[in-house]
Amino acid sequence: MSKVRVRFAPSPTGGLHLGGVRTVLFNYLFAKKHGGDFIVRIEDTDQTRFVPGAEEYIFNCLKWCGLVPDESPVHGGPYAPYRQSERKSLYKEYALQLVKDGHAYYAFDTPEELESMREKLKATGSSSLQYDHHIRMNMNNSLRLLPEETQELLDKNTPYVIRIKVNPNEFIPFTDMIRGEMEFDTNNVDDKVLLKADGMPTYHLAVVVDDYLMKITHAFRGEEWLPSAPVHILLWKYLFGLDDMPHWAHLPLILKPDGNGKLSKRDGDRLGFPVYAMDWKDVTTNEITKGFKEIGFLPEAFINLLAVLGWNDGTEQEIFSMEELIEKFSIERVHKGGAKFDFEKAKWFNHEWIKKLEVGSLLPEVKRILTEKGIIITDDNYLKEVIALIKDRCTLIPDFYTQASFFFEAPKSFDVDAVKPKWNEDKKKFFIEWQSRLSDIADWNTLAIEESFKQLAAEKNIKPGELQLPFRIMLVGGKFGPAVFQIAFLIGKAATISRIATASEIFG
Image (cartoon, one colour):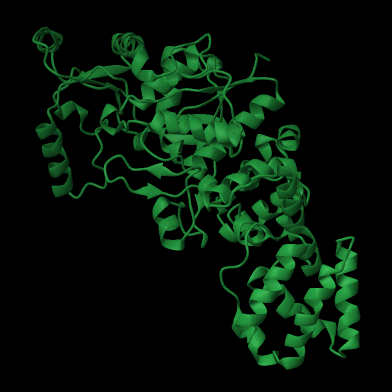
């Protein structure tokens, strides 16, 4: 078997949808499992849809996800260039070869003639408005024209496209690695444009030529490309022979949470969750569409949740490291049906990964979040202690601010309503007296603080449980956070006493 070579071929037109990242992931896992190469090729043949900055954004997303290509426009490689716009001169010769061999033809139809054709088909009640074997002999192309008429138009530089000639009444079989044996009826396939009037290839021609020249062995893409498969198979057959065609797998869609259709950016906007890997800024409107990275997902969790959207290893395991995914991944275990996206489940993966990661791995992101919120970190070791104490309570990275801010600064407000109903003079006196006892603790540690607390509570004949909530709110500001005596230990004696004094006055 030749060396495995897979590719991801995005168009630089906007944000990178999580479905696109999953396609990258499955390609990447397959390549790495089989000791192969992962290639990124930029398919920018449609210059009308090109968006400045989109290519750089794609590579930034892949870098964040840890899915680094072996070859790409950025990383180079033996089959450069890796942008189709820079390979333009390659494609025309293949299109002309197809014309010469009778598998394609020149079409000189103007936009007005094409529109007129569609209107006539509509008027007859036709169920298809395609340019195909039904109508091609009524159009302005080299199949209908005499050879000398065609040559005259070419000599005059009349604008033209080159279309594939799809013969009717044929069946095209092929094997999909996920879906098994499939067959296409050519009566349902139109004469796709292969080369546009500006000399640029369409996706159909470019993908086949580039996969051949770059020695791609396996092509994994979304199931929305299935209708194009017969055209691509025919191009392989006519140009290079089917023996060189990659093995194909058409991946299932990622569906809306209710399972009703493909998940879109609009669904994310409507339901309040991201569908892009990272923030994407629209160059026209300057509108920013939120990404998983910026709302606080870890790349490990993002990759994990995508891997199990439509794939499993046959066990109950849900949490996978990249190394485990590479070891266990099999394209044959990808499901045929679409996978519903569940944002609550996605957050669960992130929570599990926050719990799983070492404190040191979390430190840079947590430090960044706190710094952005105006908290100055002067001691990384102290921050590590805080992270270790609170990380099991955090679902998204920004949660670390809520759970950690009171370790660095006194609360700016207190949940007085939670204290007031059971606050009384005895409890107020308890905290006034306890402040002086705390001052006397020589060895400030969690156990000493707790023993002092319980001892005074017993002397005052007050249940410790009735005092812990007010104490927590004094230190934290609300009804949350880790064990309250651990908080007191970490913030230190002076801060603990100061916060008790301030809150006691507020509680009244």
